[in-house]
Image: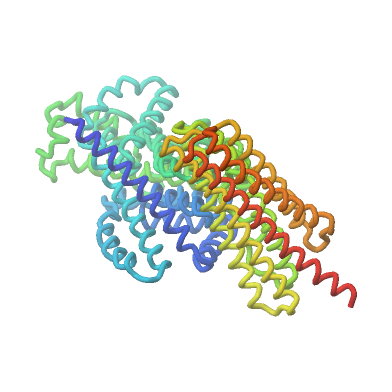
Length: 610
């Protein structure tokens, strides 16, 4: 077997195509995710049992647990499915994947989903050129899906061809008589083998070859299959690399599920293998443990027959060939029984501990920052309630969460001003602000869409005016997020032109940030209890706005003088004033929110007087 450097580069390119497909698929989902898709997924995963059935059916249909779990990771990454919902689907996917083993065992083939990839791209391309943005997003989703499968298929193509070179594993015969240590060794081999060739089905085929040649017994074949169950989790782990915290937790959940299942199986491994042998014989397939001893006996008594047994030089009607073929079928069925029983028992145990399981995964994969959690609305995830006032109240609570998230962007913008340009930390800070701005856009759309659905119900004029105010508030908060992102983009331009700020500029910019931060804090205080705002808090907001305007005017006047006196370069003054102007505009957006709250306060006061 020759494996060149070019093959290795092709393998890297295949992994890149897979990850890029995952990215395009996830982004397409995020853009196309309307209420219909969210409702469908919600119905499919309404409780742990419907989620379980969904996972079984999807995996049985596409015959790839890797592909189905990667899809689940992308759904979670797009905010369409919660971590708890994804766990039930993954549990089901592990049972669904046994369907593939049975198809291979009974019919000797596997459905090749990759054959549908190019037609899928052909159907998707026209969608990219339609005027409908939703259709474009659906086209992106399907193209990403196609790239993902192309990547998976090409990874299998460019990894070393181990299946056609079973001689590589002949040395493992030396480790077959070490008792339970042999089980652990072959478990590890199964993990590594499946991680390398990216296919538990291929591992299944290699295991059958090794067993047929008499190198290993049925018990160690089961250990290889058990290891492949863990090895197959590498694909969703790779897919989650570019995802958010929730996507990483979903992939980790898949790994943990298989690892915990493997632990209890190892504790009762030999009795479990005996149960499998008994079930296989009960199905009329013979004893799967007999193949190794039969083949070894032929090797000792008739080496010539043994040598010709696997090179297809013996006629099919030869009694030894027929006997070995029947025993191979028995082993194949036995491994399928082992795989199926293991996953079903594992599922029956784990399904009752989904909540605890989610907590363990969250502990294992903590958010790096409190604010790095997945995109997920907190108060308006469900449908509309019958009482319109409760719907509005939910929206108001969500707006507070939205404002708090956007306020964190103010701190991020201030951090990037002081971060060393050109450093890895600077790039990380910019990417983080960019990500938050995208989340801010999505939250605005979600909250606005919810409020628009509330308006369609039965509402009083007062309720409609209240919703109109909330819609304007949401729009202003989104503008604050845009301003913070604007500061980050100014710093990028400053970096590209190698402009330096003086200490005085940094001090003045910090003063503006402090003023804007105070205004944001007071705004959130008002939003927290719109129904009972205090006049003095509104006055505080207006005072902070005047302070921001005064600082802007003072810094603008000083800037001209400083440039004339050559305290800093003219171009530094331009970027400096751009930041000051952007922050002053941020203060305007804050006071616009306060104006809307003040309008609602006046309405309630008028109502009280009446």
